[in-house]
Length: 70
Image 1 (cartoon, rainbow, N blue to C red):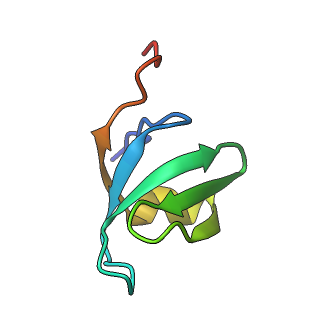
Image 2 (tube, helix red, strand yellow):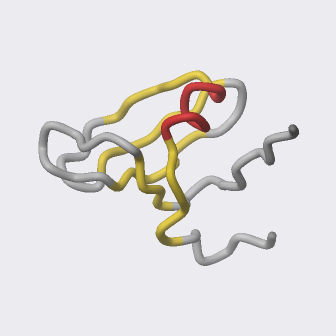
């Protein structure tokens, strides 16, 4: 069984499995690489996660960045 890698890019707004303490489920991708940096759309808190953990916790891309060429 092969799992597809989740597709996301810089500037995308993603929905996570767990709610942030401020009440928001959505985060903006601020940096990509081995680690992913995301900013809460509710309160602005910035969190950095290893890519593997981020992909496990991410549910879906809610809004794509306007200039993404997929």
